[in-house]
Length: 323
Image 1 (cartoon, rainbow, N blue to C red):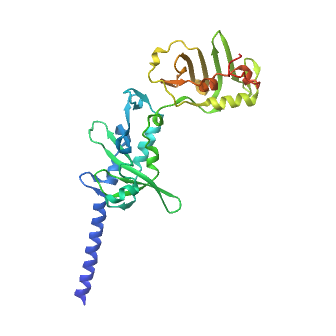
Image 2 (image 1 turned 180 degrees about the vertical axis):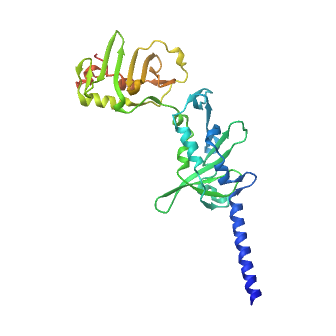
Image 3 (image 1 turned 30 degrees about the vertical axis):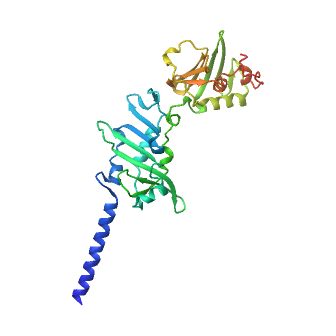
């Protein structure tokens, strides 16, 4: 009986060891190491290039780290600044990814998890290395339990797919506009102390916040609701349309300028230039490399308002500027 019992114990131990070995092998990608180790080795501070592909490689975005920050390589070959913090957040998200569950081990499951050509492939390259530090396919999003959201992920060389926490694919956009810095002004409304708008012909509108918190326009008490609404909209000014064929250095003499003074002596200047094709071109000192195209002139009208509008009086029909 002792021998039989010992044999049973030994058999159970062997089965347990075999099970552990199988799990380890499933978490290992042939020739590349296991997935958790690859994710852990992806150091955001060493990343210098990121490539994102979707639709089987037909859509592609290249992000490169340069001395003045992360930039996106446009289809024209030019480089443009990315939205502040967006690339860093992406790197941090992938640095925190930890595969939790094995979802499938066969290629036949790829379409269901969208970890085939329909998924998003991201490659992260470290400084001084030709081979990607991380090459991962992110697929569809699934819910496990009540509030747990996961993304299916797979290494390109591996048949096995896993679930990882988060909505990874949502941040892997393959269009240029989603990555670009669209900012003309980014501030909190309470930070704005004054706005000085210079129009052609030496005409100026000056909106100033007094020590008592009231808004004064050209020495006259402004309508508080109108002024506060204007400042609120102005504080977060973004625009998704660019004039990439225009050299920013060729824009010298502006038609109009808006100078926004913030707390801590920070000043942002937004300038408007005439353009026969797009109507108006805009530049901002906060995003100096970008030239914005404003053909409908909605952006210009949002920033460059009249004294009458700040006093709560109806503006003229075409949004002009009776100063």
